[in-house]
Amino acid sequence: MAGEIPDLVALERTGTGKGAARQARRDGMVPGIVFGGEKDPLPINLPFNKLLQRLKKGRFKSTLFNLKVEGHEDVRVICRDVQRDVVKDLPTHVDLMRLRRTTKINLFIPVEFINEGSAPGLKRGGVLTVVRPEVELVVTAGDIPEKVTVDLAGLNIGDTVTISDVTLPEGTKPTIDRDFVIANISAPSGLRSADNDADDDAEETEE
Image (tube, rainbow, N blue to C red):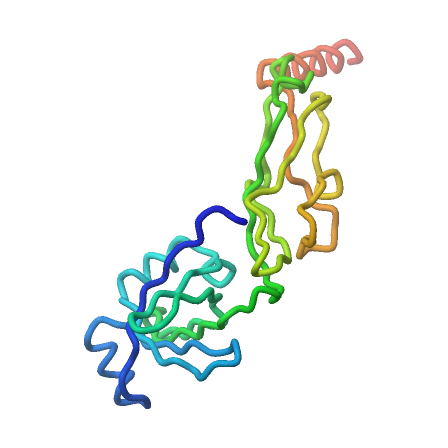
């Protein structure tokens, strides 16, 4: 199971329609709706400031949340839409979908690198450049992996790790079809400078 699923705390919204939504905004809340999961839709209010903080962190629509509403059981949800003010670009309404354990969703899963001490390229002073500290995978809501593990053993300077080199957690697959780069081992800056100087010397000799 993935590391701790963040809580999203909301209040049940009494009343529906535009009037109740406008009142919620005046009270510093953002109206929303929770749907799916073979249950009735649940109108909610989310604290504006807390929601804005979440949105600024990014990837709000691809983060699994544990929704807590007083008087209701906690439920896992994912955002399906955030409506914004066309002028201020601030959230005005949020749609959240309840998830079954078998639901397939896209989530960003953190990448962990192991066996750095067994990588000849790093022993020679090479630098591990992480292109993707997280990878977006299609996962099952009830079986979310904690991480994707990348084994660096045996890698030399100039070697690249792509998604096809990694054994993904069972039941997951990348959301991107192409074989994208996760990390590479590049030469240390001093070595690169020496190589560039050698190239310059060679060009001068040819002239």
